[in-house]
Figure 1 (cartoon, protein in one colour):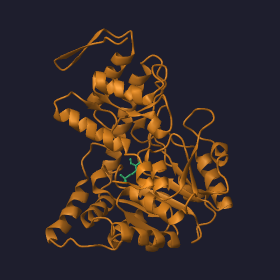
Figure 2 (cartoon, rainbow, N blue to C red):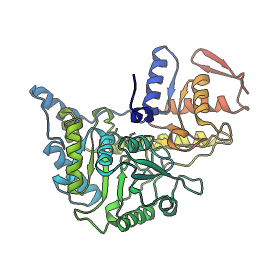
Figure 3 (tube, rainbow, N blue to C red):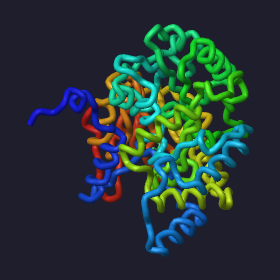
Length: 405
Ligand code: PLP
């Protein structure tokens, strides 16, 4: 069987693969702690369930418009007014099967072969593969000072005549950092001046800590007409813990949204109707689940960061949002894949290697699980790495003896 060059160039999603590995090990009765996850554990808001089941109860679940049902577009327009102070029209909105598909169809609509798309490191694992799928070339902007905060120079330095788009994700997966308002302002201005698409992946915008607010990119846009190249991505996946419903959306100019709709109509004919109705329920319903989730995550973050800081040699940057930390473990092992495998083999803790996000020596550790998992997971990591730890550790009734340091 001969596969296409494209198929051969695309890697499996490492985070989804880790979910499978963790599930397989658990099925075998292994005491796995999954700190590699990318989804909150809270329950779907009741308003989403009611709205979803009411369409199911009709027994008439049909195709919907490829760009989303009018009721969901209306809810998204209201959301955009409330959170971005921006009035958009239905023709500026496309609903997709997750933020992932919104980004993917946006790239299909924007890119010609060999066009470049710039994004800073560390980056969400899917950006390089999505750009390649759309025929483009991913270009990584590396923060020169080794932090997770790129400067405008770090980004503009790698922008060239082939650059078609820049993708920005803040708060950021995997580092959890929020980029400063000044950077967003500079980027909006730069992209308008250079006529480059700016895709703002605001997936984690509502999960921001320490009383801060997310940055609203529209505040800095001079061009809010139909020639604007600013595209804003959101989804119900993380803020409402509705990852399995697969609903995300993009706000963009009318021509772009029309092109994205044409592409999406040929791909999937649009997202599943019950999921769209669930999103209507979530967006129009009582919003307290977001605050509850944010408070839980903020507390989890505090516990995780303080525990990680207690491991000698580990450098941690406190996340300002999301549910990820991206500590530097290079004092122990520079090869992050080797380190993640070691932690899985020895103490059954799942983490994601930093290499997948474009930064070696780091591991992505999530704090969307329970406090018990976080405490025990970090305790196991410390035990495995720190030679000053006791020689033995119990996982339930299983006794582990450190024979490797
Ligand atoms: N963007 C970022 C930065 C993400 O981390 C994720 C999911 O992990 C997505 C987009 C995709 O979201 P969805 O599940 O709605 O497709």
